[in-house]
Length: 205
Ligand SMILES: [Ca+2]
Image 1 (cartoon, protein in one colour):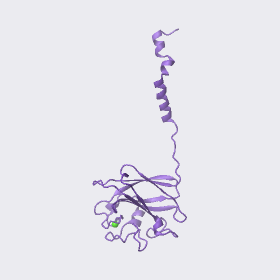
Image 2 (spheres, rainbow, N blue to C red):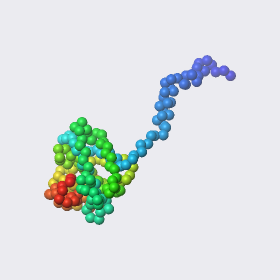
Image 3 (tube, protein in one colour):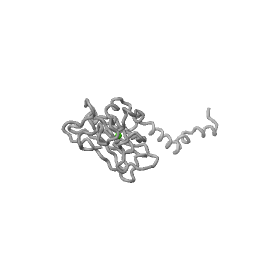
Image 4 (cartoon, rainbow, N blue to C red):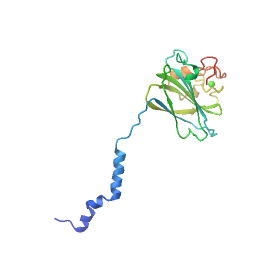
C-alpha cells in the first residue's frame, strides 16, 4: 500500500541525506575514530608552575639530575662532571609557564642514564620561586608532567631551593615519597652552600 504523499516526503532518503546531515555524520565518525597517539623518543618534561600572587614571571628553569642508586645523599654519576648534571633553560619574556608548559627533553648519556632524582627550580631574577622534586627514568620514552610548587614563606630561609623537610614537614607536603624527603631535605637551611645537592666546593644550585 502506498503511503500518503506527505508521509512519503518526510521519510524520503533524499531528505535524510541532506548536506548538513552528511556533514554532521562525518564529524561524529571522525570524533569516534581511533585517536592518534604521540610516540615519545626519550623523556619529555612538560613543566608548568604555580603562579605567585605578585605575578613575577619565571625567566629561568634549572634542572639538577642525581643518581638514584646512591646510598647516602644523592650523588653524581661516576664519570660526569657537576655541570653535566645541571641544565639551565632561559625563558624569553613572552614565555609564560604559568599558562602553558615548557617542553624539555632530557636525554640519557653515556654515564648519566636510567633512574634519577630530578630537582627542578623556577627562578625570577635569580630567586627561586617554585620547585619540584621527584624521580624519572632518562631511558624512558614518555611525557612527564611536572608542576613546580611555590615555596611557602619560611620554607627556604637560605634561598637554595631545598626545604628542611625533616624539621618542617609542612613545607614538603608535595613530597609523596619518604625516600625523597630523607634524601633531599635541607639539613642546614641557613647556609645556601650546604645542602644535599652540593657535591664539592662548587655551588651548582
Ligand atoms: Ca634551603
